[in-house]
Length: 309
Image (cartoon, rainbow, N blue to C red; front, side, top):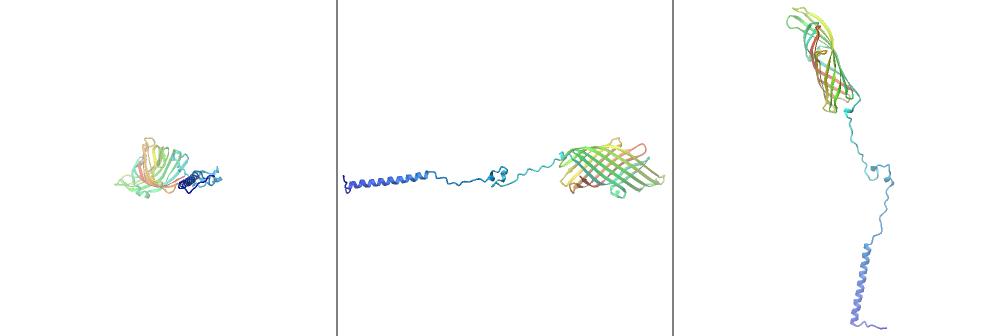
């Protein structure tokens, strides 16, 4: 076997270079191994997650599942359209018509002027009953008004022809009307009406003697005059409202002329009870060939209550 002498300077240099090269190769190999390990995927360490059975409950609503907040979706409230109301509605309204009366009345050809303001009507009102009745189904309406009153007055006559005069009036008025509701909304209503106003009037005249002889006559007449008109209600608020009516008729049928104008303000105590107050003017001109004349105007304040059901 051949032998090498490592004591020579040249061989020592070669061995040193060889050892350095081998160490460098080992260092490079270790670096490559670490790089490969870092780039390789790590084993799957994720925990298994299982959804609860309740989540897949077919009967559960989307908002009743776990983890989802529950809330309700409310539809806007729908209010009933008054124009679609086809049921029956009724109302009764007793009232007081503190009327004064002025004009000319005559019985059997004897006439006298009357002038009584509503301010002193309670001194002249003997008895009275007044009320109204309303009915409605859908847009068909009916208004019925009734007045029965007895008035009397006494006064001295001017001059010396007669001493004094007494006037008694027994008055009955019935006013049935039917119509159609043109407007029906939450803001109010407007009705067109047609009907007949029936009058039954008894006039008593007693005049005591002065220079001329006195007289004591009475006469009753009943007639009916067709009327047409309009009636309306306006809602200011849910509680306060205003109401009005105008009609006209006669035109030589029954009476030469009859007219009515009414206005009032009201307050609803409840859904079915309301208080009203206003002013009314009612006029008629009727005469016949038998000496009866009733050409008067009645006007004054009105107070009443309305009960709806």
